[in-house]
Image (tube, rainbow, N blue to C red; front, side, top):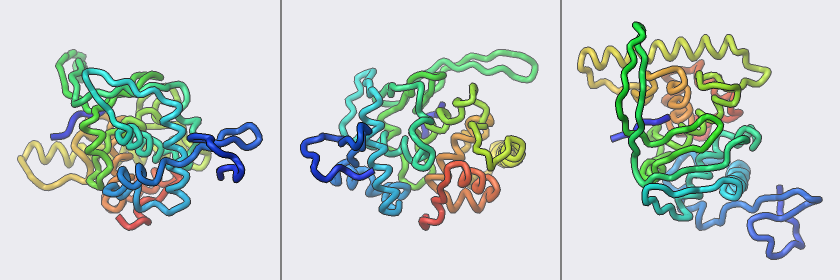
Length: 273
């Protein structure tokens, strides 16, 4: 959930459209050059990728567009560029993980703008509070992803804001049965180590955010303030910054950055942004 912010192609095959076939397996064609240039130009997480990685991401984006239903709601009018942008940003986290991570869901609902959702919180005393909040994106358990087109267009521009990566992080997180900030982990990362590093960083960030609110400080925070909301939101926002402002995240929380780098098998800060 996210609040709104103020293989090679067979050489002799012809007319195969967006994919070819080798021994019965689809080989997805990369996004067209013109489309890739337009969507990646001012997004450092995309245009700074090594050529081999960019080509793989472009093929994954084509796969995503073919395998997902983009359903406009509320009068949204997504262009082909919008869909390609969503696909590229959505596949960036799974560039080295594989498409199996996005099984069990197939629909992207597109709102034209931020949308209102009924929220519910329970405090330590058990008091339930309901309120309406404006969101830029939302996931439903093992179901559709909802995105605001306005926020999609504002995503990935190197400032740490990326509603697509944020909601995809929730999709990765829920793969083991619930949203708790701990996705299914590879053998090289222990659950205890993950929880220790993320819990420490989360508590530190909550303290910083709380101090700023309490004292009216204007000092900037290393992550979007929404990260203080819960462990699962801290994980999703951290993923945004991992791909959006990797060098800044590594300076603020080096151990956290290291775990995310091991999990995603990527090192964005090595690209120089």
